[in-house]
Image 1: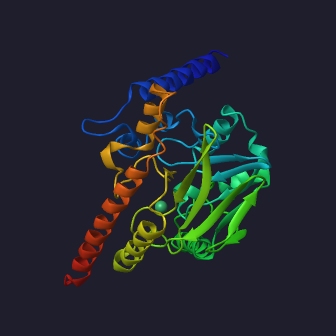
Image 2: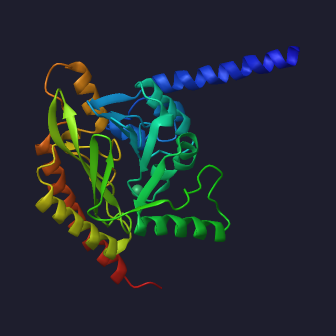
Amino acid sequence: MKGTRTLTFALAIVAMGAMLAAQQAGPAPGESLSQSYRGSQSKNVEYQKIAPFKVMDNLYYVGPGFVSVWLIPTSQGLILVDTAQEPYVDTVIDNIRKVGFDPKNIKYILLSHGHLDHFGGANKIKALSGARVALTEGDWEFMATTAANQAKAGRGPKPGDEPPAKDMVINEGDTIKLGDTSLKVYILPGHTPASPAYEFTAKDKGKNYKALIFGGPGPRNGVQGGEEFLKSIERLQKQFSDVQVAANVHSFLNSYPYPNNMGLLEMRDLKAKNPNGPNPFINNALWKQWLTEAHAGAEKYIADEKAKASKPTN
Ligand SMILES: [Zn+2]
């Protein structure tokens, strides 16, 4: 009895300690708030569990601090874009409840691309809701191959990190329709073989705005990935320079940070400070500036990768 009580007491102290640590933790010197979630505090689980927040009338942020999970309520149920990963999936589910929706009503889980930090919660949320999980053919394949290679090498995927079984395949030009809401699908490779982007209409105070979720906002995979990414950025500059609401897949981007330090959490705080003012998430100039910086960054990435590839190995 006494042992149990001591253990309970000790556990309570540990839990309190973690909560206190989360409350006291913050950005390291020189780090922005959004950046801290992917930088100095990336392993601080309690710190990552931020409260959900409303971005537009039909767009909520329900993810942990380091990776976005977007909730789009419609007249016929919910659309979730990305799922985060363990140990944050229950937080995502709770966050959906906290903003007033029932996670059982999720009809679609749209993945932004086939990386674990985005798909890791898909199995749990699908089991809870019966939602269809959607991704491009190229990224379904990429996700399965990555997991198979990990298994072959005897390193995972860890329990809870398994990719979802192949479900709905989405293609360039598809429209995903649910109730009063439609999302148009584009394929913009470079971060992964076939990262999708989703275009939809976001509403704020009764007005419509062009919103885009760009699934793969940084180059990977050497010269080839860099060149694909550069083409994707050029396509965005041509076809999507009028985007007003960029629903970004991370609060902070390690590759090409958002201009003027305007990460998602800085925008959240600006909105909270001035709830009746202009919505800071509606910002076409910021989007265009980011595209310019990502374009320059992609050119540099390709040059660096070419230099690396031509270095003699001995
Ligand atoms: Zn990724």
